[in-house]
Image (cartoon, rainbow, N blue to C red; front, side, top):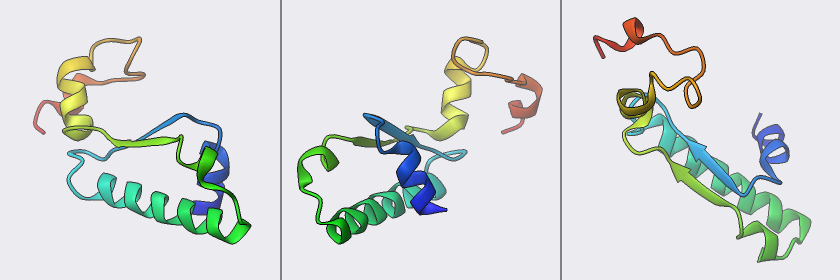
Length: 88
């Protein structure tokens, strides 16, 4: 799965990882992505030039924080259902 993700995101300038609160799964996935990306670059002998240009972020406060601010904005949150997040 990670090789596919690396290929799909290779041309993206910014990659954002998250989970509900961005306290465990989101940061863990970001770390795994960065380690795999580094290993793939080393294995292919790629220079650090393009590899270091991609920025990897973790969404502050996760999707819970996002939906509190942007959930109702249909331009930013597709298919949002407020009732699913009321109790979170």
